[in-house]
View 1 (cartoon, rainbow, N blue to C red):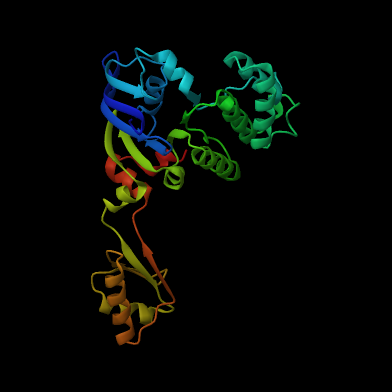
View 2 (tube, rainbow, N blue to C red):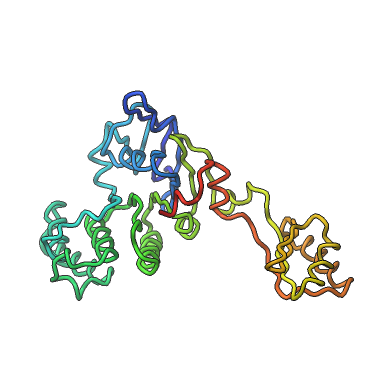
Length: 313
């Protein structure tokens, strides 16, 4: 039996003359977090719409939860949940009424529905606000309610399309914790996001989508290792020691204002030991010592050519 929750091969989608998805391939293992990165207009939301049966592809094959999204759309919908870019809550209803609406729509028996609603309000820390209109909720509370509504049907695969856009840092981290808990329970998460830190923190695997094509796939660490630029950062207490360090490591770059020397390195223990031995042999001490590797911002910029500001608006 396949361990894949989502299998995509040669997926294509066009709007008129514009190619939005140009033959992408994906494989998402069950019980993991898969993150799709890309700038605005890269095709992330279109991908989610096709995978969740909200839109038909123009080519390729897509299987979700073992079912073909074209010929077995009903079975796919029974296995998934979707949380879009904007909270789909009814602001005229209370939090509890929104959940009751989802219970009614999914056909959950009355007794089970009441138990499900109570459990979800508790899980998402919405008990105190359950009887208040959703219009009074903060952005973070709306997003939590939206995700709680998605969970009413107990989906095993959840598509989260930019779930933390517009949230403050604290609310974003709360959402991260909820997502990790879902995966710990065996749920598969397909996450699209504009926040590189979010993908780095959460994802087991990442795919980078640019202009309708996948330009890279791998774990966060695998993607970061594709780039050169790992270096050891040495900060000295005065210019004299900075000058001495620069003479020892002529390949290094220096920042006179910060009194910092950046020495190219592979970050391995052997090379780090050699660097420290060199400093010790010349009785030269650095006030601070750290190893820096390329982050996902560097990866994204190198792969797509887009400035990172595109991802942090």
